[in-house]
Length: 115
Image (tube, rainbow, N blue to C red; front, side):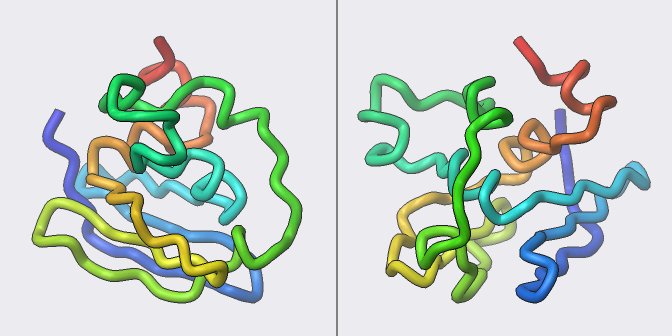
């Protein structure tokens, strides 16, 4: 897969992050899902647990509104990813385009990327 975004938007009032992809698909991510699926080694439980797709359990994990699920900033990481900075200071996760697309919570993407 060679996913590329054509637009990225974050709404702090709606607490959601939206990516429009080059194939015309739009992914809407609740902030809680993004934080639950943080791809950093610390959140994944060590380097040995890191993989290119999110763990299935992140889609059912409920995270309350707190500094850990409030977006502070989004930083481009080269041309291949974004780093999300959370209000609690956590900023270790690099969300590459493939990982973000595999994290899309819509039914179509869940069927396509679920393993």
